[in-house]
Length: 539
Image (cartoon, rainbow, N blue to C red):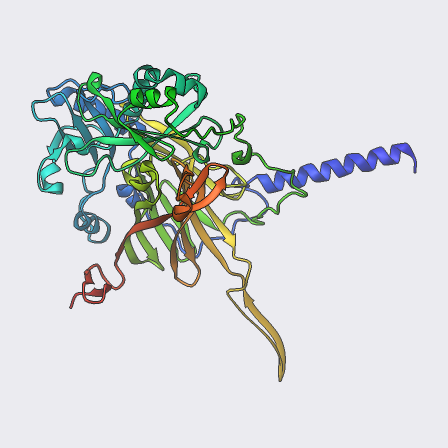
């Protein structure tokens, strides 16, 4: 074939490929010759869903500014606060009372005032405590009220406060500068510690009786996927004092044995009185724990395609999909939540939201055996991670950012924190092929709308989905991925899990996921019958 002909065919092929890629990667929301599928119902929300909308960065700024100027105490930025300081731990939307919202949505009542809920740590007081204030009205606050006693039945003691990110940094500094140097031979020869080669993972809760604030920290090789590279060393840190200089290690565990402190461990090592299990040093990429693909993909994965654009609409925090409509938001503590869920215009649920993710562990190491994580205390919404297009969600999904204020007095943005997409479920909703008496075929494509966020809390990545089906069903779904939590494998460790690597025990554990489901089917006077644990309407 003539060379010019070959070149012409090559150019045409490249142009075709480029055009196909543009079609696949472009939503085509702008007016085009292809009309989008019209929704089955008109969006009549008219901004009402904004009553549930997350705080904007500007509103967060105003709340912080108001608190700084109206509490009569000095507030230190939580990102650098000491336990003995006063600081703002978090600011989130104060969702209005349901009765007020329903009067506004259904009865033509006034829009409820927009308010924020601020959690403050008061360490610089004669009686240190945690206090929660409702601040409003937004966007220009003029009042605050203490709701702590109303919510918790009394003052909240200071030792119960969730740990700030800066407190973990302060504990890490204590270990590096004061604790590890007391065992120089052990740390250098056994741990091969160079000042940065170890990573610590916190256990929880912080003690076993009221008033405790002591935490086990498990040490790992500081490599990619460090969660499965334990080195056998765990330290119990007493950080109950408001004076950081008074913090100390009150117990040490190494390879099945307990020691009073690192000094005693060093002495036992120098005298040859401990059993040393030296862990093979892992490369920086973690070797077996690396997330890098082991082999290139043999072929490109299939892509979802919307020939006429999306069949759903998103306006502010309101979503419309066929017969469904709902508002959405992201709580800094509990994560993804939905409000005013309606089907064919009728409210079926006032709120459906994630509330807590609890995991209980077992191990023959103290860090693992004492761990009962409640991820809401770390912040499921705060740790919502950016979604990767084409992997975490389809390429053509709608991606939305989220703003939060926690552990700092400055708000932060989580890019592409939520995605919304319709997916073909791969099997018909219903179908029949008739070959008796008469010949015909009838079938319906089965698709669903998915609202998704993914929270990375420590080693776990929780994939949170709310799924809306054409048949009127709603599904709340969670998938756990990421890394296993592990302990150092020693003694009878295999009673508590499975061997993951040479010295790595994948520990036995149980996940419990809690949701709030406020049903309004047939009205809003539903209760939970304690006899059968089923929802039933009040007569």
